[in-house]
Amino acid sequence: MNVAIVGATGAVGAEFLSVLIQRRFPVTNLRAFASNRSAGTRIEFAGRPVMVESLAPGCFDGCHLAFFSAGKTISREFAPTAVRAGAIVIDNSSAFRMQPDVPLGVPEINPDAIRGYRGIVAVPNCTAIILCMAVWPLHRAARLQRIVVSTYQAVSGAGARALRELHEQIEAAAAGRALVPKALPYPIVNNLFSHNTSIGPEGSNEEESKVIEETRRILGAPDLAISATCIRVPVPRAHSESINLTFADTLGELKARELLAAAPGVRVVDDREHNRFPMPIDASGGDDVLVGRIRADPSQPPGRGLSLFACGDQLRKGAALNAVQIAELVTNL
Image (cartoon, rainbow, N blue to C red; front, top):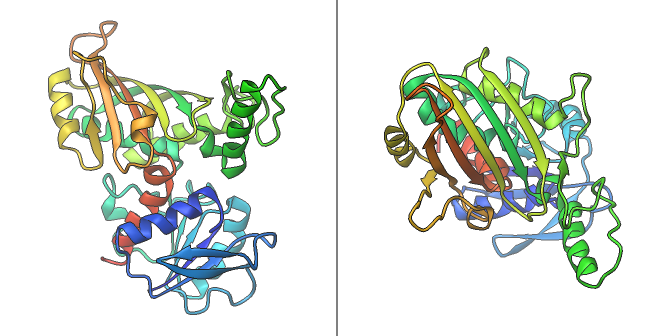
């Protein structure tokens, strides 16, 4: 299969390469695209060098599958071009996520919307994916009425430049030097702040709005009440989420733990005796969403409320892994 990666030199692009190899995806020929600044450099895939190219007319000719992770502006301009050239596009940006004719895919949750699809398939926001993976098994059993989620989002979610900035600021802080933000709006070491996206007139930042809208769409629950607060924290990799749930039907914590333990792509980490629960350091580099702190919410009627804590690698299940899983479904692998 002839495969293209748009945004190949970015943080998610590097994960695409890794996941394709690990899952033995049948890549006959790989083409890597990035900005003009990166064009002409080389990356390695499966032990061989691949030249990075600029996007240009005709660049998707002969391509069967194109992964996009270069931002919504590039996706809007070039994803339809790739489809017209005959490629299936799996887009990691926000460009098409809320278009009703574009599937918003999480293979463990809505595979029938994806399997065999031709055209553009959207990968959801990474935070929404992690949230949905944690709550979907419970929603099927007891019908969610409300979600309150607070997120603690890793710096690498803002891209490779932000991750480098974190490491530079760690060194600067250790040496007593001033912390100068460049990729992020404020110093991130010894700090945390509202997610670095624009604030809408209602007071929510863009990330919070994405989590709300996309979670409703993924779960097929357009009227689900959701409150989200998204915060950037000084963690290199893997997002964490504190989740409070209200159900229409009764669901106890023992049954919830059972359902989560059986759910594909979820791993329960809930060791009360040793006070060990999901941590980003354990989720980093892994494919599963870790879920723990599973407990009844005493502020709600018995059996109607639960609290959870979840961690997931936003570059893997939150982006590249989810995209490759979609590719496996659309190509019937």
